Every structure is written in structure tokens, then in C-alpha cells.
Image 1 (cartoon, rainbow, N blue to C red):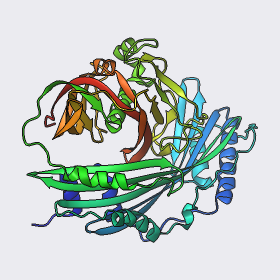
Image 2: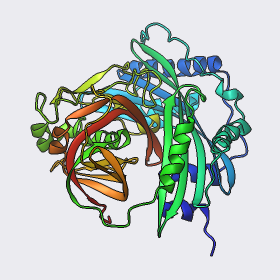
Image 3: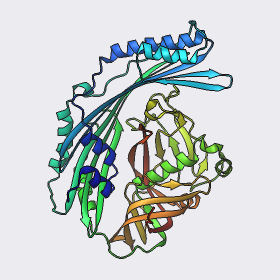
Image 4: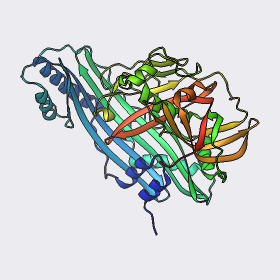
Length: 476
């Protein structure tokens, strides 16, 4: 019996499986061509100016958002390598009306396509005069220039990781490396607004899988940022960590379900914070009466150790930007101040920059604490990417899937490691139980999709010490 990659990755539960399969199975013969930035920007801005002025002539106040996005993914695994490319262009025209807003979206980034969208919105023709303000500062390409990076160079960049992993083990049954790039040019045009930016989002991931008895143990490390392709690289410690976690022997006895003192690693904290903000701390979530009552501004909902902001201005943040998809300039939004609700995410973001607009976070920063090491005497250290944390906004119930629980006794690890556990209970008491946070922080980048359109965000978090109810993971 032989398995193909889809069966292997699906059966193993590899988090980056979708991107890996796309790189291996959907390779295109050539990268889509993008012309010189200056030439492209000038033409598109002129086109958007014309669209907004035409709508103004029809008595409509309009905003035009245009995107030209290229995605390139290179991956290598034990079966070989692959590179895939895709291009997505689009324009979103939004007009203000007495009874709300109307939108028209087109994938044709051309004069014919945009003016057809204009005609779908305007009931009468004409050309108005609109002051767009000063011309934007030209967007700069990252270094090295992405247009000079060949497919072979992308594959070589991934292969370099495997060459640096000099320790081999027959227990490793699957190994993969990947680099995933979203190169987006964006233009935002409205009255007193003429903006452009280039967002070069890069993700690197490293996957190792080993069998432990009858179950596979999956270990993945990743980095994600906005900037040049080589701005962040895996160090030797991260490569060794991916291998050693996969090879760690799991404790065969059942996990001792119950309330325990816990250390939550940054990748677990990131999953919790991401799910909590999406479910509870956006302007859309606040429309639910039970959420509005429980999380009113000023309410105490967490430990005073926790201060949280959404900050797209953070240098190099994977979820960062200069302006959002509503055309508003990036700014810091405080959400929690020492456990008190002080704000909600209100900035407008669109999946793929062309999907339905929604309030969504960009780069969440949980403030670091004051201790270098957490004072855990007896309990468990929880680690392993937790992007499938579930928060029920109606009841505040939370289920946090965690890959590994390491037992701590008398301040030291016992060597007992339990796979596949989950933290359950109410989110409020869990966050209120936090007593310490480390000065060290780590950043997790997330790229998921809604109806085939990508969403990018990132979370920066420290290690947290608290307590909660932990049990063996229940089948869903």
C-alpha cells in the first residue's frame, strides 16, 4: 500500500499541510510578471483617481482600494521539492449612501474593469473634482529585490535548513521545509487620501515527524515577518528543537486530568489571545449583548499582569501595515490595560485585501513581564502551536488544544511528556489566574484563509504562569 503526500500530511495533522501541498502539487511553469513598480503605481493611481472623481460626479463619496498580490511558495520534503506561484489582482470600490455603504469588487485591474464597477455603482454620469492631497511616498521593494530571486534560489534557501540538520535518525519518518511569500502592492484613494504600500510577507516553517508507538509526533517551528526574504533565519537551536521534540518519547500512562499550575508557552498564549480577541474584543463581537455586558469598557476581565495592544506599526510584524483596507493609517489600539478592557479592534481588514471588510487584529502585543524565569514548583509546562483554540462568546467557555505537556516536580522537569492535552473551562478565570509573565517574548505569525482568501496576523507574547483545568484531549 502506498500513500501520496495528501494522505500523509492529512493523516499526520501537519499544520502547514495546505501550503506544502500547494507548493508540491500546484506548481506553475513560470512566475507571473510584474512590471516596474514606478510605472505600475502611476498607472493604477491615475485609474483610481478617475474612478473616485467619476463617482463624485454622480454625487457619491467613494473610496477605492486596489491590490496586486503575488504568492510564491517553495517546499522540500523527503519525496522531493516544488515551487508554486499565483497572482491575484482586484479593486474594491466603496461608496457612502444615506442608508449605508455599497461596494463593487472586480478582479480586473484595468480601466475597462474598474469603470464597469463604477457604472454598477453610479446611477448618473459626470466627473467631479476631488482633492486627493499630496502624492504618496513611493513604496520601496525589500532587499534583495524579490523580482531578482529565482525559483532555484527559493529552493536553495529551503534546502539550506536540511543541510544544517546534521543529526539524522531512522525514527524521523517525515521531514519538510517551506518558505511562503505573499508580495502585495496596495493603493488606497479617496478625498484627501492617496496612499500606497508594499507588504512583503514571509513565512518559513520546518516540520519533523517521528513515530512514538502507534502515534505520530509532529514538531513544527516557524518564523513569519514582513520584510526581506533573509531578514529572519532559523538558528541551530531551532533546528535542533524541531528534531528533538519529534523524537521525544511520550509517557504511555494516562494524563492526570485535573486543575494544575501551568506555564503557557508563547505559541499557546498566542492561540488563546488570537481566539479571544476575534471572539470578544472586536466591534462586531460587541454587538452581541452578552459580550457587551461582560466586556464593557472598564470591566476587569483578566489579571493585572496582562496588558494587550494591537499595533500594526511594529517593525517587521507579519500582520503589520502602513494603512488598513479602509484606508486608515496604522495606529496602536489598546485593548487591555492591566486586566481592564480599554478598547476594541475596530480597524477594517479584508481577506486577501478584496474580501468582505471586517474588524480584525493586525499584530497583537501582550506586554512582557518582569521575571526571567517563572516560579513553577509542581505542575505542567504546556507548549505546541495552538491555533485551534475555541472561545464561545456566549458562555466564555474555552477549549485550548495543546500538543505537549511537560511535567514539573520540585521546579525541575521529570522527563514525563504527555501528548495531546487540552485546557478547558472559562476564559475569565484562566486569564485572572495569571501571576507572572517573562521578560522574554516570542512572535507567532498566522496565515489562514476565508473562502480561499488569506488573512495575515501575528501575536507577540511572553511565557505566562497561571493555573487551569487540563485533561487528555477529547475527540471532536
